[in-house]
Length: 233
Image (cartoon, rainbow, N blue to C red; front, side, top):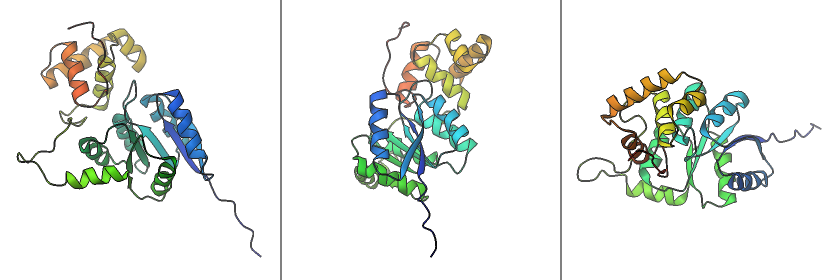
């Protein structure tokens, strides 16, 4: 009689900046019995580092996080690990966000009011290499399958719409979060002079010439989710 092999857990890295939400998601995932959260990240940059180090089966990624948003984190993860399976969690069911993360190679998109049962199902499907979307997301995608009268999709611009590099997106997000050049330099491990060069290139590429304008652009492009109080108006 052949021995029965123990079922291998699906290893997950969970990226969510709110501790209470992250703890709740972990409990929901591990309640399924076949899923184990092997790493947690409170911001996008830590998520990228953890995924590179742990190489999990699936990454559950909040789309709105400090320091590096979920879309840019997904892009960097997929560049480093092309086979990485990322599931996006978001409060938004806007089809423009969904199309962006699909274009980045995410395996699925779930809205945050999704049940624990559906979340676990999504992780299992992603682990198999299948795509999975919340039912209301599927409805949105079907409704948005045809272009509008102008032939263009609505919603915020993608991270790469203006040809920004990953580092420029990182700098832009930190600027939009209200960090000064020195803080940005410390966070990214680069010199203040390099930060100033990135800021100048951002302004040239976007044709925006003040911090408030850069912040408004970052919000409209979905690089940061919520407006921050500006010190320069």
